[in-house]
Amino acid sequence: GGGSNTTTTTTTTTDTDTTTDTDTTTEEDTTTGPVTVTTDTGEEVTLSDISNHWADTQIEAMVSKGIVKGNSDGTFKPDTNLNRAESAALLYRILGLEEPSAPGDAPFSDVATGDWFAGYVSFLKGAGYVAGYSDGTYKPGSNINRAEFLTLAMNVYYAQSDDAAKANIDALKTGAATDFYTDLDTTAWYSSVVTAATELGFIQGSACGEGRCFRAGDEITRAEATTILYNMFKVMLGL
Image 1 (cartoon, one colour):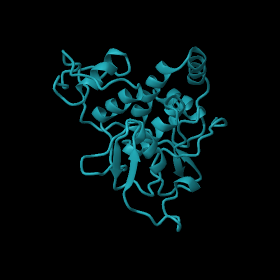
Image 2 (cartoon, one colour):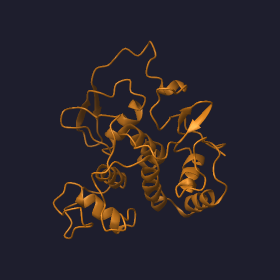
Image 3 (cartoon, rainbow, N blue to C red):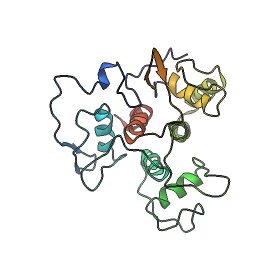
Image 4 (tube, one colour):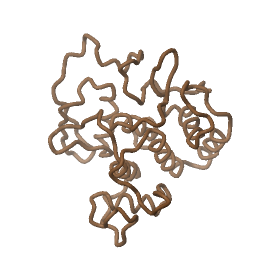
């Protein structure tokens, strides 16, 4: 498994990573000032905290496309966790649609029509990308883990793919589970998604001991989520 994994960008924090492209402590990298990105719509976005981050290239690219946005204080906070409301916004923006209006009806019992994320969640539910929980909730304020986010992203990617790409994903998901990670439970519900995403070069986990770990249950960070979406959708986005 993992033989066709072509990406060289890790999707997890890289304190122990040995890949050169995510090394945040190289001697040449001395710039730590703000980074200004011009978006496709001509807006200039200045971020104070991504310079020399392992995912700075991916963050800048996705900011330029309007997929991810900074905070009002000029930060991006790449290493903070992503919650389920924020995840819905990122996945919606990947589709290239106009910003949604507030839904007429609440999509889940804990998502009010006036919530800033209600339009995103409502659309994704209607399109079948998110289903929420069996009790009728979405839990928008809960952090999302790496397996959950990858699954939602792959749902969107699959829907945007042509028939040949869909058939390839189906084959990867029903084939043998990847042995690329030392910590992947190959009987888990997310194993097939991780296998497909790895074989397609969207993820490669991070270094752990002598091998690589996916860390399925870890809460995903903003940088990790941005990198997964970059790897997955860069061709569709023209990056």
